[in-house]
Image 1 (cartoon, rainbow, N blue to C red):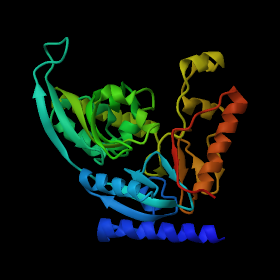
Image 2 (cartoon, rainbow, N blue to C red):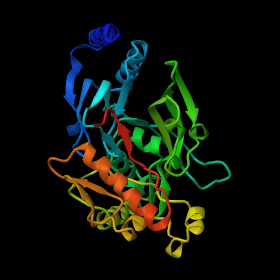
Image 3 (tube, helix red, strand yellow):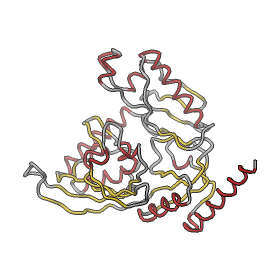
Image 4 (cartoon, rainbow, N blue to C red):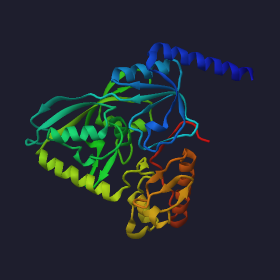
Amino acid sequence: MHDFASRVIHKQYMYEELKKKLGDKVKENEPLAFYTTYKVGGPADLFYNATSIEELEKAITLARDLNIPFFILGGGSNILIGDKGFRGLVIKNTSSGISINGMTGKMKDSTDKRLVYLKVDSGVPMNKLVRFTIEEGLSGLEMHLGLPGSVGGAIAMNSKWMKPPGFVGDCLYRALILTPDNELKHVDKAYFHFSYGYSILQKNSDVLLQVIFALEKKDKDALWNQANESITYRRDSQPQGVHTAGCIFKNISPALAITHSTPDHQTSAGYLLDKSGCVGLKVGQAEVSDVHANFIITKPGATASDVIELIDLMKRNVKKTFGITLLEEILKIGEFE
């Protein structure tokens, strides 16, 4: 009991030290549901809105020095925050810088490409960035129009679009990260080990502060046409106007589809969920979308526990039907019941 009381007192002391150093912008017991696309989740002990990469770096460095757990919140998609909230500091990243950093007349092994290097803060919403690049006649990200979340989250997850195929990491040239030792470090694209739904940021404790994209100069009207095709397909194939966090599960590999003899060697998690009878499943105020079976929709009164229970039910259905254990894309943050 004495040890527990000592830990509580020590934690509160560290919280007070953090508040002194970060100032009046720190909020206490801030409800997090508002900041997520699911609109569920409990409060953060401490909450800080970092409006620049300098403020972001300062908050992370202080939290590390004081041994306070922290989580960086971008657009609030692709995450599920526990009903009990987060014990520590939640840093809302609203850094917003976008600037042209230079250009070149050609790329390696090519003489007909004009590249523009665009410097972007990690807190910039992906939709804002995509629209900016299209208006500037810069190609490489146009298929991601409609992608929720921030640049930092999109890089960390290597967010994808499959019609036509494209990953956010494809256009990355360089990045500025804050290492676990609080050192600022410039790294290149290879550092991230990008693959389907993956970057090295999921494994280490680096924090992405800023990126530089290498984008090709192209006709603005053609880019808008491509972007509008993507957004139309997104609207036709995904639930709209509801509270959802994006796809719950990753697609399976072609090798796994062959091994388990899925119909026509289907790799789509949405297809497997649909054929496993998941459409219409409901737990509390969370339910599987009837537009796309890989999406969970939350309604007023939903809890994170509802979502967790529904995810487990969906996994069991696919396992029973196809013998496949789906891997989750959604990140669970904080404390759950």
